[in-house]
Image 1 (cartoon, rainbow, N blue to C red):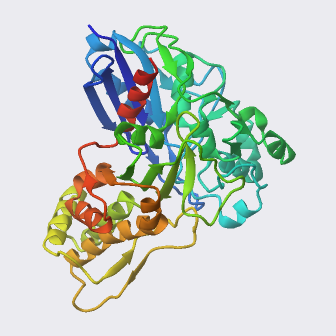
Image 2: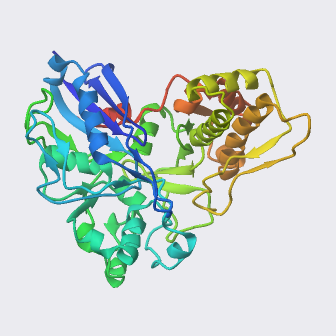
Image 3: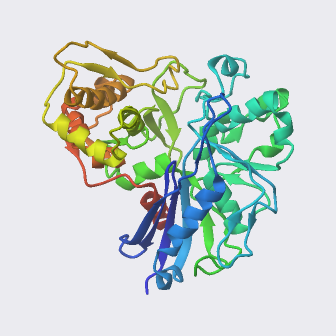
Length: 459
């Protein structure tokens, strides 16, 4: 039997695992499960947290659905996951392997996710200026640690290690005392210089930042260690790569030519293309810019318009309508309601209603919230509103990455991907209206597949 690479993506709402056959580079088996890990915020600080025990439980269940005879032939394991967020744990006691060939979370904090809003604009403005081309925003690991330093310093005393959720899984699989992190995830934390691949140690030390919580940075594609125990049939001693960013892996899975731009609309939305090999990012942050430059592979960069508002804006609309209907005594499931809204919008080919869906703001403009305008008596139907909302998602992302910028970069086609695009025909119609380049589907961005492909190419 040919060896397999196990690709794992620990996403914001779900976990996905794939087995990639190394010879054919074909996906032999895969499984996805929702984590159902969100924790209700009762603090009033705009916290967005998840329960890591539920995430690890969903991961274990996912692996358990894969064919055990193939898991026994896994030659290496790669992980990607949601970026920016931070999880804290205690070295040497961050999990429990006593329940058989899987581990459970132990002695960890809650996962503070990339959607966390506790760091206000005022708070961020008082942080030291980073030595990096990337700005620091709420939800970024270092910003969150600074927040705890000011508001709950005793919280940090309980932990000795910090990392992203995918870094945590790598550490537990390998039995590491600390945390290793790639530049892809380190850049998403802030206070990391991608040109030197080093943390801003002097700047952070001057701000009395707990430097011991910073992970050790190692190159993307490197090996973190080997599995310390059998895991669902995967033998102990199997190499585990250092975790990568889910965004970079999703792009890797579907960008087949440098002239491609990838538009991904899932929970959030991103539009990206590859910069030339000799590109160097600016020396300092450009906080007002809607375009960021993310480290990719082989010292290259992606130009990225990363919107906080994508499929989550549509989901919020559905939740709002569902809540109204519940109050009126006419309940329907969210999934049923979503389908009916799409059908209404398909019967409404266009709308003069204008919806700006930036209900979460944007990192480059956090105070710009959602708006509905050009309201008249003739455009208040659900078809009009749903069509306008889908159009608004595209208007927002193309305002962040202007079409002229794509043309200057030589982009010849748009690769459309993501769960929201796959599910929503109206959204696909609006994508095809928004871009002069041809739009192709079928090469769906998939972080779990992408991380497995990266390891396969490195073998």
